[in-house]
Length: 239
Image: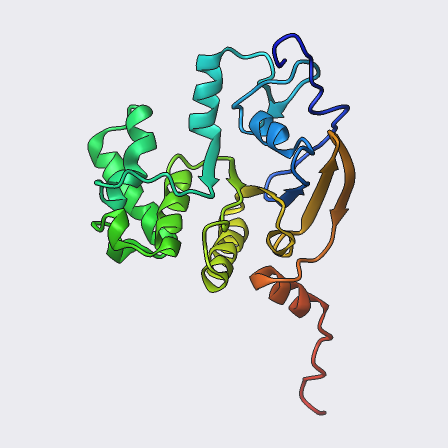
């Protein structure tokens, strides 16, 4: 609703995302992808229909209940890193656990584990201005992982990074998806981001235009699919 005008941002969207999928939702400006992202991330609710996370219908929950779902179930990664500038990487990663009421010792332990997971175990006491852009985004990813979410929702996560760093970050997402079985949903207009995913959903004018599953064409998942398709070697001992 915009004043007295009702705007239909999405219409008849029917989308299932399974545990462990790595999905890119793509669309031009005004396509409805940001509205869909807000609904998936429990930042907004739909005016009609329903939306479930892990079997729980969240479409009619109150704001406090939605906040609790976001805290427990969803990790967010954005184009801007959204780090506290005067705070160490470790403290930035701990922040969601403070809101969740987790004890200091447990926060510290889990934040260290998250930073190790993204390859920043030795940089945990550095502040954002002492880290590169790629390292800052790794801190943001570690923060998204800290509550052990069911899903990571990433909005243009490489938008502020150079090409080489973008590749490193996307391959990190692939490793987390492969090794931790974390569901990862990207919202993007960048086809290079979609190249790393095994599923691409395209949205236009508020409706799903296409929903395609195919082997990724970039990153470590591509290598894995190429190995799966490679013929077995004709080894073995001779009689």
